[in-house]
Image (cartoon, rainbow, N blue to C red):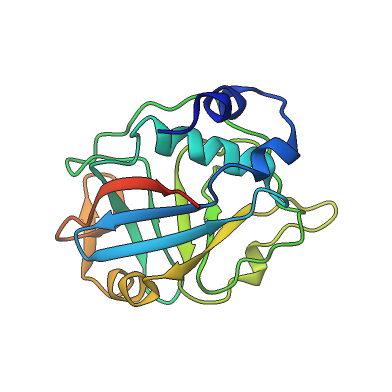
Length: 187
């Protein structure tokens, strides 16, 4: 659980970046393939980090799967159960893709639709450098908000699993890869 002050802060639509920087910046995904530890960048992506921490705090990522895996590109999760039931989310957030962070190997970014301000809970981890996904003036990209600090071997193993179609979805791992639990790591 987030500290009560931080919980209120995370749920606010406007907040102090200084106060957010005091919140824990490390998150671990305990997956069915091993642990992935993330370091979040609240200074460069305050809205996105606050949003992500809100979903971690309420247990949204516990029991979801990596539902989209494209070798040589990325692994995506945060939105579906093992039965490919889409989870409800809160309102989407404003993109922060022009924050100076790049979609490099091992970074975590928000998934979205064609609308740059449509990201909610789904995220992806880049398995290669994907600079073409970066934002630049006049062309919003995909907001990077952190990086893998431990468990890149786990990310790579997920990125190599067998995938196929499941209903209307493509690139779904044939054996579900669960995020059993997402947790904050206290400083």
